[in-house]
Image (cartoon, rainbow, N blue to C red):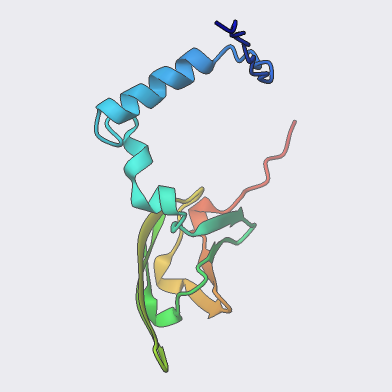
Length: 158
């Protein structure tokens, strides 16, 4: 009887990189599978925060007024509502856009919707009745005049 030789094949694998947080990553993955999405991290399921639909905003405290600029690309001026109180301003936006395309056998129908509400605490009291709003190329600018008592006063040092 012929003698059979057994050969062992060794796989060569790249060395694993030591990651001190890998145990925590594994635990987080396991918890994400076990519990419903967002149970441990409530902000993770907030659609406005996750999808990035909240407008980016600049608030500039100037001598006579406060300038608020909001980037709202994809919205028209009719899609946006602005309200102001003495110490805050609220921006609300709502849009619905449909796109249909038919070419021979090809058919595409997309609906995009977006809503946001954002309230900002202002650094000084403003007179909302004299506020001005301008909208151009997806950029909303609000000029909110300060109330007289909220304007900066120079204080002389003795």
